[in-house]
Image (cartoon, rainbow, N blue to C red; front, top):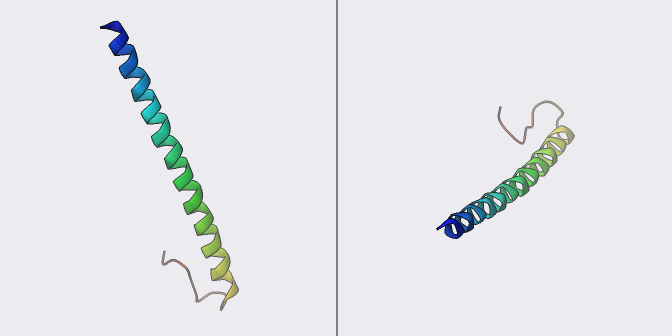
Length: 54
């Protein structure tokens, strides 16, 4: 029983680590896309064109 509990904890931590790793990758990709959008927005008609509407 103790071996099954340990195996369950290992699988849980491995799954959480994989999910957190994917979230970090998604966060980096979105950050780079945001930076590109800000850079493109500043190049055209300095104050009127925005990549996003905030």
